[in-house]
Length: 608
Image (cartoon, rainbow, N blue to C red; front, side, top):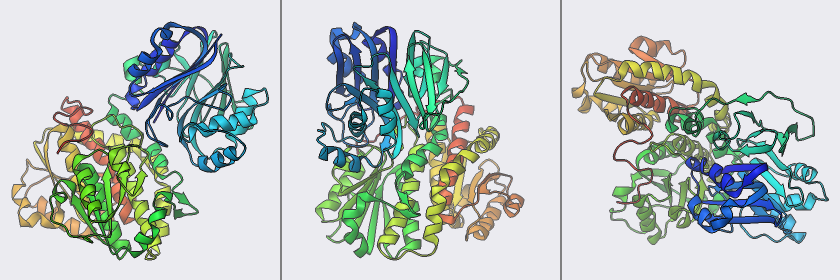
């Protein structure tokens, strides 16, 4: 999730632009850059690394006066971090500069066409295509050129465009990525969110999907892509600059949970076409997938729980023998060549030390590696035979929330793709793919209610020192993940078990002071789960259930419950995720803890 800033008008310096960009550092990034227009023409300066690297590059120029400028913090999607790939990107003339947040799905087709017409590219990014496309349409009117260029784009974007010969205007547009604009009457502004703008303005306009914006010092003009004028009221922002970085949320963790609908859109974008899974990333491994009879999944922590869901899916819908391994143990196993036909490695950061060593071990034995990660250019992505990015954007909270949701969605879709390639998909696969496609809307509709339910029940359970999470089938992974979230951020001892294992030991722990969190959706194992719940109730344990909506049978068997939408069995771990996260979050808050920075934990585990 990149950061965009733009300014045009009175008393503007490069420092103001860079200082505003710093307000977007919380979003995460790997490079930064500016494009500024002055009497000397358009200048573009960019650097890999922190904004401090950009400041060092700019030196005394920081206090130079300019009349127009755009700035950007990049979080790589197409092409690794480098000076060439950093934004802003320019056209062949060097007069047009573009900053972009999002993904252009058809950039490769557009780039090929533009290269045939003589355009010369300097980066491997999708964004540079936009600059050259605008150049292709430009004939003296930058506003018209941008409007026409946007008609050729497929995917998601928030863009800001400047032209050396039009120093009084910034052109912007949105489709799928956030954008905020405003004007003081003497200066005009745009940004990815309100944080960089609060020093200058409090009345802003939130740009909606499909809207086109012309920003001038004296005011803002908003229209639709077809030129139809849009009139909308401004919004007065009352947040402090500090809280605005969290978009008004108390913590990044809560903000990131509420970003999950958009996270799902980003994760699935371009990967379902005509109701069929579409993974171009694995096409060159089609023959290996068709022949595969065994597959090993490597992961740690939350990623391991996502891997459990993937394993179950493959077992249910393919003839592939799937195993999931904790990477820290796998790397020390004695293995022989041919131990597995394929390895799927899952790592949010792409730098997880144990997972990295696991794939290196597998590669030495001749096994093809498919990796799932959130970070472009990470070591695991570079050392894999194929890499699938989950496109969740930066996650500031240490405990995984939106990245887990993105992993689950992509893995379920990948499982459907593997079943299709291997020729073993059943009649359920199209229904699962169709339901996955609708998940962003389901999350949007249910998150407000989930927030209310979890906040209330967390307040009732925050004083317990222990918790036991139980589940069966697909819900076992949810039990493990729910217990992990509670441990990570509230420091309550929590264990996750397969419910059928209770009578083999863990049930000895239960009493009135040791509650049970039961994951019991409307699936083929529900009756078995209710029997396990009754066993815990017989030991005086309070039971809180996460169940399907309007399930009267579960309601009669438990002390309290949280209801989730009814979905197909493999999708329950996905739809239940925000409920487990919110319950843990509100318990941590009730205990006065900071859920964003749990003690002893790091976001990326790069040591053994």
